[in-house]
Length: 287
Image (cartoon, rainbow, N blue to C red; front, top):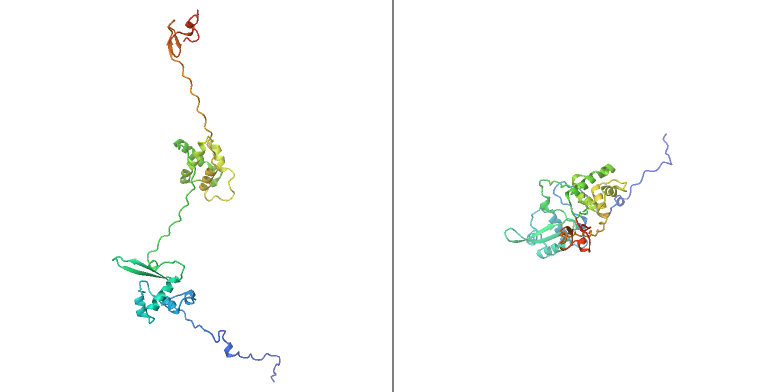
């Protein structure tokens, strides 16, 4: 004989019919997924606090049209019952809030036309309908290489001086493999090294200045690093040396009027020995 268990829970009671749905008494969405012929709009338009229903509906209609469709006031007034004035006011409101851009342009035949651009997301400049048309894909341009900083220039870039600078730069990688330079980088840096060499610095001093206290982190652009050092640590020019005094030119040779010997004097006359009383010819002034 079956017995009932008094401690078993009773069958749950059905909820009140009005409480079975969390949106009871409010809006209920019954949505189906669109796969063709649909237009996506943002809630910023559908729930815009300042646009009228006419303006919002007109914006929705314009966004659903294909590129090239006529959206002038006359065409829209023939399509909707609101009339030209209300449609014109709605277009102005959409333009004020960024959903439309209207510009007047001159057509190839000389006629002035109004070009209207519909913006489904104001403030976000995307591509226009012409740019969105299918076409051949554009090749992605490689990123441009950053230009190297400028370097000092020598006062007189003699070919031999530039060649010494190039040879010096080629030896830097022996001190640090990170300082391996391309031909283009070497040609750019060579005038800066030449500017150091013409300041009476030996090549070893220039090399030590460029390779001393290198950073521990990787050198992604060693040429740019060297260009900065060549500019920031450029030593001053050596002091100007005064020119050497000109050497006094010797007096011209003269024939002695007394003994016919040759001596140096500014003017013709007698030699020193002949000028001395009783002096014998052939003194220090004679040759």
